[in-house]
Each structure stands twice: as C-alpha cells, then as structure tokens.
Image (cartoon, rainbow, N blue to C red; front, side, top):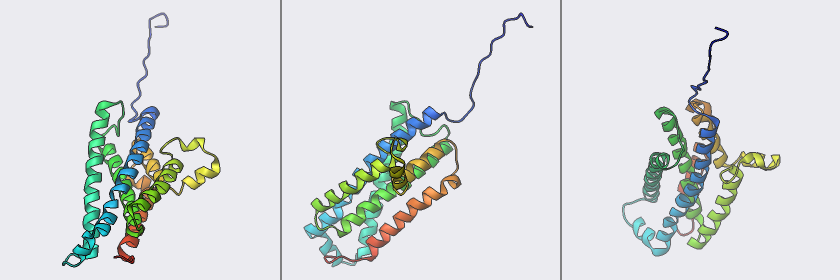
Length: 219
C-alpha cells in the first residue's frame, strides 16, 4: 500500500463558486445601469402626454387620473419583465455567466431583479410627474441615476471606495439590489435578504404614493 501508486482528485460540490457569483453580480450591476436609464427615461411619456394635450383629453373622459397612471405603471412593468426574462435566458448562452446553478436560485435572482426594476420605474414616474419639461426630466434623471449607480457599486466594486462613501452607498437602492442578488446567488433564501427586499419595496410604495396622491398645477 505504501509503495503503490496513489492519486487523489478533489471535486467541489458547492452550488456556486466565488468567481461565478462575482461575474454574475458584475453583469447585474451593468444590467442595473441599463435598467435605470431605460426604465426611468421611458417614463418621460407621462410628461409628453401632458405637453401634447393627451392627458387633458383623457381626464375629460371617464378614465380617472389614478387609472391613467396605473395603466402607465403596468405597461412599464410588462416591459421590465420581458427585459429581465430575455436577459436571464440569452446572456448565459452568449457569455460564461450563470444567474443560478439551479432553477430555484435563478428564479430568486430574477425576482430580486424585477423588484429593483420597480424602483427604477417608480423613480422615473415620480420625476416625470413633477417636472415641467422633458429637458428637465432628462437632466434630473441623469443627476439621480449616475450617483446612485456609482455609490451603489454598479460601475466598480464598493470595496475600493473610501469607508465614508461606502456608508453613503448603503442608502442606495442599487446597493440593496446587488447585496440581495449576491446572497441569493450563493444559495440564500428570500427570507435571508428580506431586509434588502423590504427596503426596495418600501421605496417603491413611498414614491408611487407621492406620485398618485399629490397633484401638480397642470394635473
């Protein structure tokens, strides 16, 4: 036995590896960037309707202001769902990125991403409801999106930023999203990332409540 040829081979049975999760989270950071710009700027349709007179004609019909906003909201949600489903199914076939080693993990990651898309939509709707022109909306959304993306760790790892800046980033929805996605990709359940999910859902509720309840001068 001592003189015999003995070889060993080590195999890991972990669901994910650190490198796999890092690539997935990095790609989700860039996805968050695309979603913030796409979904928030898409909501400029609200202000375009107001300026073109479409909104004024609608409110003279049985359609209520709340119904009008809800229909806009659901149209953006449908676009977000299609976008997320396509990306989660196409990207892994093109590049070496996995959004979950099991279908369960993939669904959890997709759910976290969809909740974040709701944050993007609610930000855009809120800004569009109170801005006076498309130019103002575009400027405000750029001023909001870029800091949120940078401080949240979408453009570079948060670890390379000073400690004080990281603490500021803790209040960014992008940081909540990436933190939840990172934990879920490692196999954590939704109850383990409940804090991040509640923060994102709470932000959605607050912003949409403000958009639906408070009236502006022209509506």
